[in-house]
Structure formats: structure tokens, C-alpha cells
Image 1 (cartoon, rainbow, N blue to C red):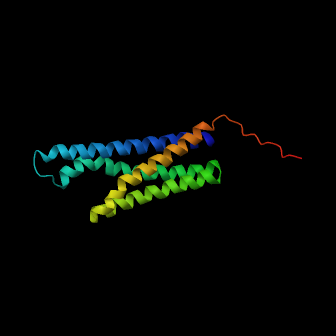
Image 2 (cartoon, rainbow, N blue to C red):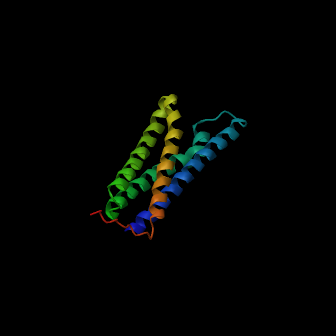
Image 3 (cartoon, rainbow, N blue to C red):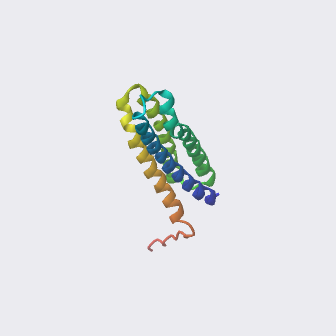
Length: 142
């Protein structure tokens, strides 16, 4: 199950990177359409639809990652960090929802995205770095 955890950690990080890429696409798509005509909801969603839709899939990937961490028994610190990652993913959705109503809250959406990326990448690095290493315990001095 440790292998599943390791692979899923990498999938999680890749999904977060892709999601950030979709945000860039949405921004430049809409910026490009401003020259053509006023941007309406349809035009906006044409550009941001992938980011919006894929974001919910990233949250689902995060939930599955948490369940895998629990099943793989990767240790309390990793499980807690994976739980923290899932919490940041839920916060990300809330920041997006409330950011539409109160634009200032939207400032925290990209900042939180980078926190998610950092934690996800850290978990992935930790999972793959420990691969094949045997932990040795030093004997206690007599």
C-alpha cells in the first residue's frame, strides 16, 4: 500500500500543477477576448471552465490521497500533513466561492494554491525519498 501512497502523492502534485496551468490559461484566454467585445459570463466560463471543473477533481484526488494515507499506515505525521493538505483544498474551494462575492477574499485563492503545491510537493518528495531505505535504530548507550 506504500507504493500506492507514493504514486498517488505524485498524481496529487501533478494535478495541482495542472490546475495552476489551467488558471493561467483562463486568465490569458479572457484577456485575449477583451479586445473582441465585452466579456460576458459565457466568455468567462469558456476560459475558466477547465480550471473551475478540474478544481473539484483535485479536491476528490486529495480526499482519495487522505484515505490512501490512512490505509497505508504511513505514520501519524504524514497522515496529519495529508489531512492538512485536504483542509487546504477545501479552503481553496471556499475562497473561490466567497471570492466571487467579496473580491478581496479572492486574493488568498492563489496564495493558498501555492501553499497546496508546496505541501503536496513536500509529501511527494518525502514519499519517494524514503523509497527503499531501511530505517535503522541506534542502540541506546549502556
